[in-house]
Structure formats: structure tokens, C-alpha cells
Length: 166
Image (tube, rainbow, N blue to C red; front, top):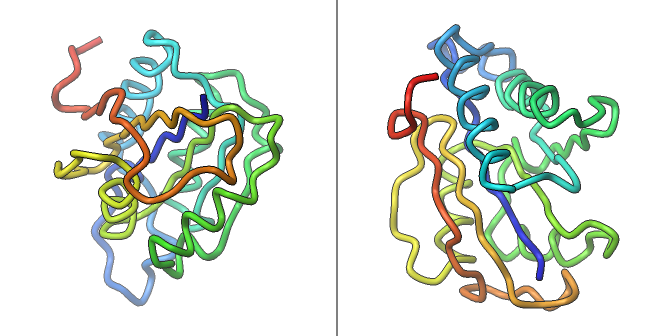
């Protein structure tokens, strides 16, 4: 089995588009990232690889997850296409090229693309992805290259507002 966890970045400061790449997380965003990563860990959803857009808000979200999972920050992979945008087909192609040693991939990205990717890969997922929402998709395949659109099953979605206060 292969597992994909799609994470929309946590709540960020509301700057204009001129400074979009540098937008940082708010205090609430930092707390939500800790809350969601801890909930994932309690359910046994553990990263093999963390991949993120290099934008400040996604990178900060990924770093908080890394701390909670005791994942080495220097091992976080940055992919500029996750910020610039890619079609769902391009996203599937990216996943298909992953090293087989990883059984799970966490991808930190932006809306609307991250929601589109969840809908494209997961049968029956029509939900929204608010900030720091995480969608866990399981694929009943042995190799990343076997993944195709609509071939995943929703394991669970984690939304910070729906999780208990810690």
C-alpha cells in the first residue's frame, strides 16, 4: 500500500499578492499545524517523505509537522511547481516518479490546487480543504508508478476546527 497525505498550508497573514510568497503563518496557523500533525500521529499516519511548496507559509507548516514527527528538517523536499501550480495530471506524474523506499508522502501545498489534486486522486472526495486541512489517501498498489486518477480511497480528513482542543 502507498499513502498520500495532502496538506493545505496553515492560516497565514493576509498580505497582498505582491508579497504572497513571503506570507508567514499566524499564531492560529502555527497552533493548527501542531494540532493536525499530532492528530495524524495518533492515528499512525507517519511521513516517509515531506514535500512542500517553497512559499514561506507552506514551508513553515511543513517544518511544524517535521518537529512533531521528529522528521529531520533538512530532509524536507521543496518543489517549486507546488507553488507555481501544476495540473492534476502533472501531479500524478510527480508521484509516479517517487522512490519506492517511501511508503508515504506528505505534500504541503496551496488551494485551489491541493483540493483539485485530492478530488482527482480520491474516489468520492468532494469536500473542502480549509487551511491546514489534511486529506489522507490510501492506494492499494505496491509501486508509486501504479497510481492513477480516482484510484485512491479516503482514509480520513483532518480539519483543525473539527479536532478536540488540546
